[in-house]
Length: 347
Image (cartoon, rainbow, N blue to C red; front, side):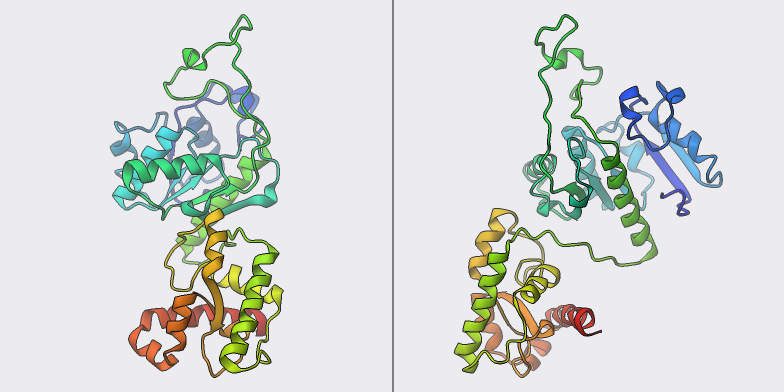
């Protein structure tokens, strides 16, 4: 899709060859291509679609010794589709170190539900086991907490690797049969449609980024309806305490869900990035509440912000004019979010 959308230069890097088992998910390979390096197979096919595109194929494994050769050209984007953790962590860390934009695909194996595929910061990909391992390694070995967009599935894998059987049927150590150290001899079953959807999402992201089109991805907020009911009730009680009545609360539970999930992504408006994810986000709900942005206007979809209790008290102690004067950047951020809410709900 990058090629078909007019991207004029592509570097394809893969040490692997087309195999019979990969034909169910390879975008262009045929039976005749089995045994041909995947990068070369793609390059050959690309030449028949967009011959003007400068396509280079490198049949090699990414590691520290090949980093300079692969990344020194300062690419606009690096697309990571590696499934080996050591190599994946090394590439992502190198991209961050070099200041390169990188988008990472996580595990597509043993998934079957395309509606559960999401894109978010690495911090928020809490369901996926590969993401969890990569996140832990990046933090421990490179001090990288997040800031890397990833495509992943919320679906729990439906299959595991079976015990390895050698030529004689006995249980054996898979590493004894590895051609490349650290890489699996066997793979988790892959439904052919799922990697294709991962790839389409990645291509769409890159194309819109290159075009300067900002697309708001669906936020990953792991809350259930009871959390939204709690926040709604907390809003009503706060309005009665501060204003003497809840008559100006103009939102129901479904609208609270929109405000919390779509506008504030389940965290305080003052948080710069996701810090509490998964179970941590549930615990964080114990100290969050919805309050009016402008005390002179009703508690509507376009006038409610999510804050921690202490932040809410501090916000209500100041006028909106004070916030605008003292915290211009925060004021502008919130104003843009609430303007989006107004457009979404009232046109």
